[in-house]
Length: 177
Image (cartoon, rainbow, N blue to C red; front, side):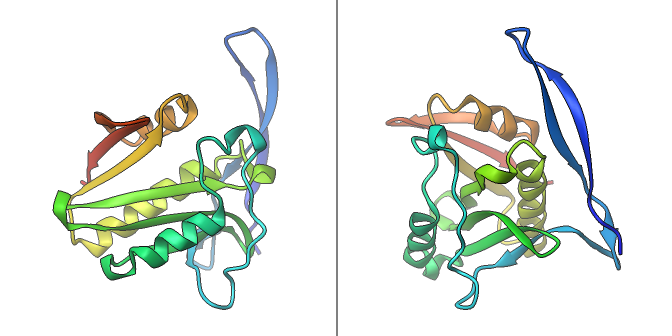
């Protein structure tokens, strides 16, 4: 059985403090990635996943994510778990946004116990790949709360660019290639 290798790297932040962080290296088991997205179902929706207290200003909890998935069910909403092998480490949601001719990547979060390990980046990559496979749109839009610099930097790594502002939310979009 292949496992996801975990390694430690030392990062030097602007303030000169070095922090040792765990990162993941995705490996494959039987031809599938160990990090994967699994649909939220009636059998698995009661997940105990939470963001850190400092992030609650920026990220809705799992109950809000599931309510939003229900509200957008007529727009092909997909609520998913982010899993490392059989362990749920986060959740996300996207749905069709026909008025913008795009997908709306509504939310993604990684539980506070698993943050800083690369799961968010892996989950975004996988969700974008799923959208590309579905093929209904060639564009993805998302919003993040102003001041959430970590989210902005992460989204920019995937090619998202700021396109506007809606109250306290910054709107970004990218083209699926």
